[in-house]
Length: 115
Length: 241
Image (cartoon, rainbow over all chains, first blue to last red; front, side, top):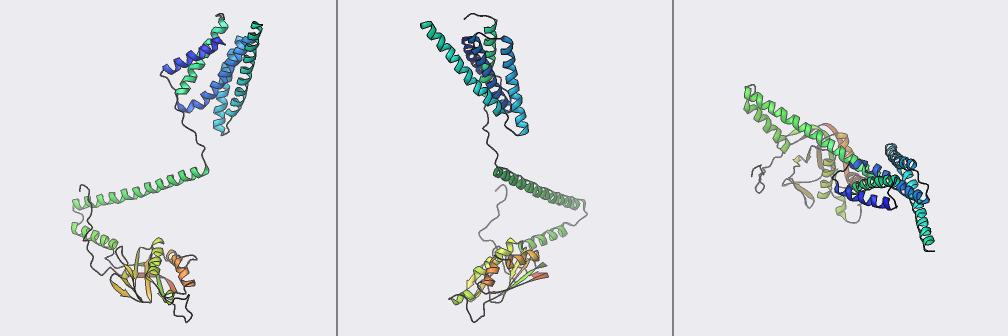
């Protein structure tokens, strides 16, 4: 949890300082990929808190999900069907689920400590 | 929290994710507006208009090239300069309306309503007015008339059509009924401009009971403007002035 939050913050600062940008045409695919990545990180944090973290699952999910989401968005663009909605709904829903689990775990842990 | 491999990997990937998010923030993503059928139609029309413009420019280029060729042949001595200039003068005179011209077209004959039963209550509704003639002429021009005359008076850009009581004044001369309007152009289109339902000519004929007869002719002769016209106030604007 701590590492993930600090990592994202540092990443954002570094990214804002770095002068690199990519073509605007890819921005839709990248945004969907970002959503998938965020979901993976939240899932990783949750698994970590639950004590069932598996590095292989985390890594494969992080890259696999984002690439799949980007490809889905691309195919949707070609076909004229907004397929990236599938990625948005799936990962967006899971993002909130994961966050809810993290909240419960943290709050339960705190209340156990204070008891 | 200990620093172990797992946490380092999560940290590393989070940094990567952060960088991507930041770069995405920096992008100026253009606002996507859904394309409506109407906007497609508008764009299509714009494209067609541009194509038309290109065509016109091409014709213009061809015209200029021909002119250059002509000048070159004058330089070579193949053509006489004065004959070329005479030809040009003739052309310009024709365009300006100072040349008698002929061609296919229609003749419109208009006479007042001579019936005992007057249309409406005011008797002047049975007469042909200057505005009637003006509107008929405008309809003919919309239909592509190249030259128009009224009772052998050439209608030019500076010709007035004015009410003079029972008569109409045009080019400073008075004309009375019957009024003969001659126009050179596509005879069928011109005839349709007068006779087709919902045109002004149709309304005049069927509502005001003005007698309008049209006849398509293979050869209509339209006389030259026979007055003297000079610009007193207007001066041409040349490049460099």
